[in-house]
Length: 354
Image (cartoon, rainbow, N blue to C red):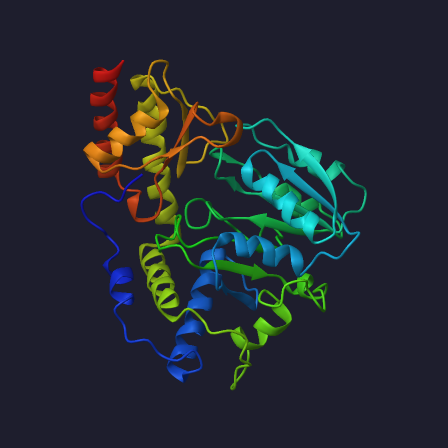
């Protein structure tokens, strides 16, 4: 959903106007260290290797597989949407033997099914908040019962929107994106890796650019940092600022703000003819999925919302393309005024077209 008439995150905008320092400049290294510490707080972890990958969330996914999976490794992956399926694709390219645990789109995955799928996998991987369906998958039970397996979690749409408790849940590897609930433009993928996972780090990953053996000496080094690649300076300024906004508000307050907006949408949308699509009890507050009412054209409806009201929402993906809308209310857009604007726009639109 579009950001509305004003942006509550001026700090992020101002960050892009800062003079660009060199990526080995001591002042920038200090900012990078502070950014990583802020990420630890948002991730709720003490993991030393916690930093933003210099690319979008999909690169975080690939980093997580190529650095910890070798050919022939048995990997259990939960699939109930586009991004679980994408995990399978990336892990397959890394040479893993995949065991897919599937649930219908719009439904959560029972953690016990993932735990029972293989007697001794090297990794269990699942999407916490499935962006294609608006469904949450539970993580805590996996972490408590995973045995020797590494637990990998996609938190692209969950980080800073709903509770993500890396250490408490015993998560080994997790990645996210900047453009969702952190309220920062796309371009970086926050990553956190446990000490336990680092003990299984592949010595020569398939990707040079995403090789954590080399990157870690730049992001966690003492004194002189090993040069790996040129960091995207301005994006790191923006992430530093965005994390500062989240932490100034307070994590619990940020989660509560997203929850309040999601609750209002979940309560009001059915009154306008938009039935909630995701499984009850597992609906994301930051990403609401609804069935499109009969008689309302998917493309035309979203076009009118954008052109008349400045509101952009996502269409359905995969098997629900043209049938479901995905309404993002996250980051700085998760404000009740934006919810009110959307509901008013939908009321006008449906009264005209239905």
